[in-house]
Length: 418
Image (cartoon, rainbow, N blue to C red; front, side, top):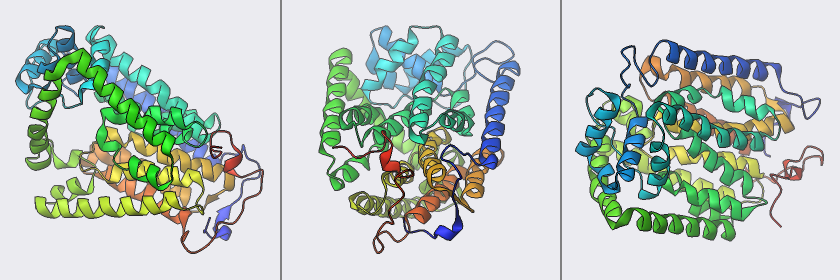
């Protein structure tokens, strides 16, 4: 890598973990556990002090599943009907809407969850989806420290609190990237399953073509098509018609009218609107950033000078930069980029600025509830800057060969596919 080796502290052993990193992760992990415990005992998770359901994101998943089980999957997309089911589930009404806007294949997950009582499904969804996320982080870091790093990520609590799918999204992106070098078919399956949130797959076709990863490309496409066909057979044409019909209304509500406060979304588009910028200017900045990220990633993945973990970290961070619709729980994907950076640091040594910068990332994510501003976007920019520093002027200088014992390519999960 084209970085200044004098700025990097080489580890004395591959298993050595900087004490500051270890202590920080332990503290953050305990903070997540303490906040979740407090959420249960203080009655601001699942049920309030009166025994009524707390209006939050998971209620739309369970309610959509309930409509599927009742034989009306297409009605999951109807805002009024969805809210009526949600009010019945929660035992109280609320302002606004938790609208269902996922493609029909995700109704399979919703239907499974709706087989269980609401509180069991709520807690169970967080726990079950957390498991593959843990596995992905462990595989990326390449040692058991990955479990601690995964549990310490500040957004873990937020995602659990609202019952969102950040764990699933992060595990699928992480699985795609960690499996790609040696198991391209399995990688493609993970990527195909990610089509339940298509905005996070926008960059993958581009980089797969640039890197000539055809098996991943075609496997992902086949899985996505298969999921669409199965959902059509299971839920009917009406579900897809409803999805297409209601999606423009959803986009208008959240990207034009700002029904969700702009501070909740973590993109350059939302940041511009948060500070009062006009919609046209926000879109212009978003398109410039998206185009820039796409071009850089295509060149990066085409290059043979950059080691794979850096390419993977860049792609994980890039998926968060190119979409305007991004909430804090979606920042779980940033944990994947951080895990690749930590893997490189543990294998090759951390630069003096890297651990403090990662501390800043954690702080920005934790400060969101206090500020109500798009601090998650700032965290993504910091991680992107760290990746950029590690990449260096790769288009001009060759990569210095690493000692065989330290080369990430020698690891089974990172070796190039034969």
